[in-house]
Length: 512
View 1 (cartoon, rainbow, N blue to C red):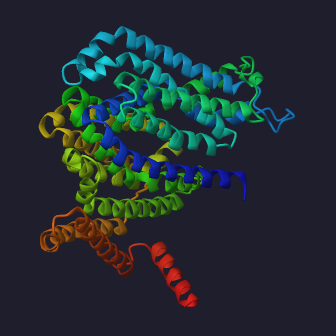
View 2 (cartoon, helix red, strand yellow):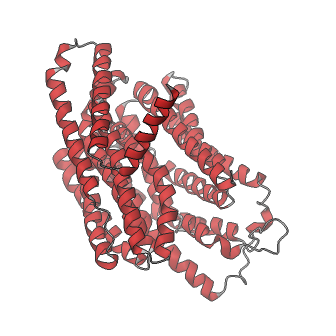
């Protein structure tokens, strides 16, 4: 097995391990030891740091991957160490971006604090920690990318997905058992990202291919043409990061307009809905190189076939997970500590679940556009999505509170994909839509209807205790899953899925 396959498998395992640990910590530690307001504070600070850190990167994380081969010196005796200084460049550019962001923080410090002073005074109290958290988040990502181009992603993935969560867990428990106060808790929470950043740095220093000498940028190697190409691509990628930041905008608006307590309720609901998108992270990584190769060859017939297949399976998997989450949502809230305080986030789970399912299914079209010669046009669609998210957040939070924030994400995604898919079809005749997708939506709609019927007809037969509620949820999940699996097979929604089921049946028959 090659190094790419090994590292990909290990990286995926790190992702899923992180999700499992995060699930336990979020639902059985955070909800027990932190108030809704304190949960909201951590969410606002992390989301603000993610937004500003991604802007401060100045597109470096994408640039280092794209231009890494340019800097590789094959005459070097260490398997092509890029001794022209791409690592140094990858550290220098984000530092420039960070200094710009820090300067803006100093200039607009008072107006920004004023925004949160009334509804979320805790954010105003700890505003001074944000530049530090931004710096940690920024270079945590930079060091991850440096490791990834050296084909070493497992340790950085473990540090981010597992390490940060365990560091945070220590802070939660120390605060929950009154060993430390709120001030020290917030410092420890922010410091966990700094510790993770240092761990990634030390890991890079241990790699054979990483030496301090490679940090020196060879400016003579960076000709005017190369600088122009790097600058153009970096500027483009700096703009495109806005698309990935749309979900983070919600918590910032909620903290300012609705307060930290409701932001905390939104945070727990958002984490639940985020599970819908977990398969997309792995399936998307597998499909992108294949689609990119077909686009490069201008084989648009093959591109059309691939994107329809990928989109269908992404929608099928993500929608099935969304349905299972929804039919068990009341049970989940019943079992988590202080669940009644967070149950008001059900509308957020509904809206964000749909947004995540649509994004999982439609995002392959964004990849096609970015791989094509029309990639620069995506800036327009990203600008529309970001602007619509800001406007809708400002409007809908006042009408629907935290559900309005989730609805803003859903509607801005739909507007983005409506425009982008139309443009993609106009230019390339590539369409992700198929009859199979319509069948999936019909089945999911039937699943929601059956859940409503079960809730009204069967659930009242059980008493109101938590464990009877759990038994009801298990029976409902098993029945619903079996029914939908049979429907997917009988309706021939996906030939690939049908073939997998047939092989499984034959394999079981041979064993028996």
